[in-house]
Image (cartoon, rainbow, N blue to C red; front, top):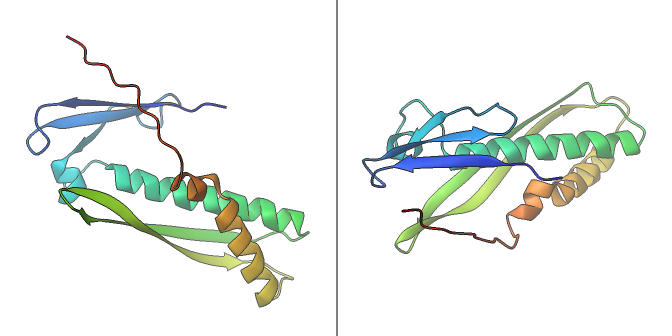
Length: 141
């Protein structure tokens, strides 16, 4: 399975702007810029998208893990807070803090903690934070 998204950018890093689109259409020319990333202008930014992906992936992985354990959650609510910090002359995502609030009948605290920990480790987005990254870069003239 391959999922695709595209970024288009015009101008410099600080004064320029761009848009993000995904094949599913959920992102369709969604604006992003220095101001949407480092200030609070309306639009999105890569870190917000990573946070959404991590929260969604982990929550679904947990739902599957709970199903495998024979229990059904009433509700799983996860927030991912992604930290972007300086790293020399650039930046890096240094942390993704997942906060989970769950309603799961018929499950004790110890089993829940174990299952949730396994789901976090097995979530593909958790794994991608240490993935090999490839780049196919071409300059178009």
